Length: 143
Image (tube, rainbow, N blue to C red; front, side):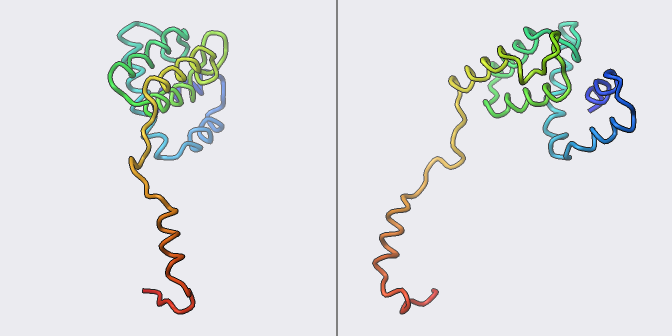
């Protein structure tokens, strides 16, 4: 999370305030984001670009690369959130608010929509009909 810390300090935020900002992140969020922040840093180092104030084109290329590597929409969206939490683009907007990033994410969603958590669900009406046939209810045991 050191890139996030550096980004906060580079904005002129006091160390005391920065500590509170960093404390606002839950451990799970830090763990989830750190994977993509590390990948982002490697991506930027390979291309010799700033990882704190990149061009929107660099961000689009990074998210596209994640897609090409087979990551799901949900994972790419997490990467977008991670970058948006500390990166400011050249025009001062955050990654997640940039119109081109939004369009890219919509396109990825269309190409690779998230799958439901459960591939099959039961028809509740069948269960309710069965329960209705067990009347009178006051005569039924809990078993």
